[in-house]
Length: 407
Image 1 (tube, one colour):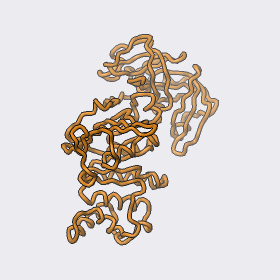
Image 2 (spheres, one colour):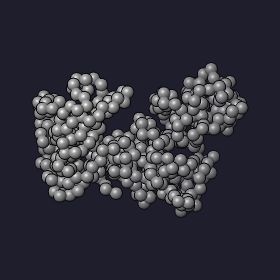
Image 3 (cartoon, helix red, strand yellow):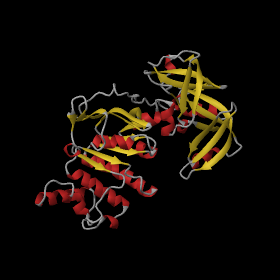
Image 4 (cartoon, helix red, strand yellow):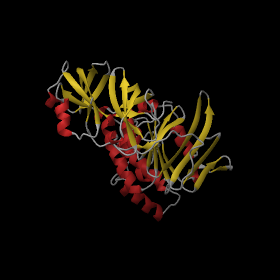
């Protein structure tokens, strides 16, 4: 192994596994603690998130939409507490349960639920309590905001999927909603339209300054849209954190599988590195052994580790580097600083899959492990490697993420 600097360690914001007793109300936040038993399934959700765009992320059937409906007051609960800022919407212990119309929530279901016989402006106006001049003025403001000019008299069947979504969002905002709830807003759209509307959603959120809770099972949507991600599986919250923290530093192997960190191994601590090898003052470096392969990893300074301890970890494969055989040491000396540890492992390229915007290069190490590494076409061309080529894989400590929990 060779010690080198391969990139500045990115300290992640802490994320936590949340139990119902740990979620506490904060001013400027949405706090949700809900429970209800269903046949073969128990919804037991607890989280507190700041204002912004929050994504409830997880597989289908995990309880995301039920959580959204509970916040809106559309799903009855056995027990729970739902608070937005200082407004208590539901508190079973105090006997408080505001009906949906008093929560001032804009709710957009998966199919948008537009009235087919009403025009764009009539659909938007349906959410208003006022009529007359003030109503027309508000509808006009929302049409401008959502860039629906010229479509005022069109009916939903005459609109594209993206236009229908903007009408549904305008209607949800019409009554001065304090919170927007969006249930799988992109699920019925094709890939090209989804990508465009993701960009529009971020711009929309910056314009309206209304907190949004959005449900999706799509990892790309969660990562690109969210200020905060709430990972849900089987009716429970597994992790809450920023998009970068959840996707780069999943807390458990289960979360790693959901966010796409598929290369996960178990290894033993063989040494605790000296403090200067840690990438930040808040972390410590450890040497790991995995079936003959030696690696380095950074772990939080507060995490108790000792030689012989078993740890589970995942690979950030986009931070791995492939070198032509015999060039790793020279290339690392040219491009790196000597304060970071990089494990150099020989192997052979066994597969090259063209994924359109990048190639997925599969490398089998001499120690038997197999890894898929994303590479852009130019990088691959410059290396002059293909299937059968002997290579050296550079694995920096930053690419090795140790899970903070083995549950």
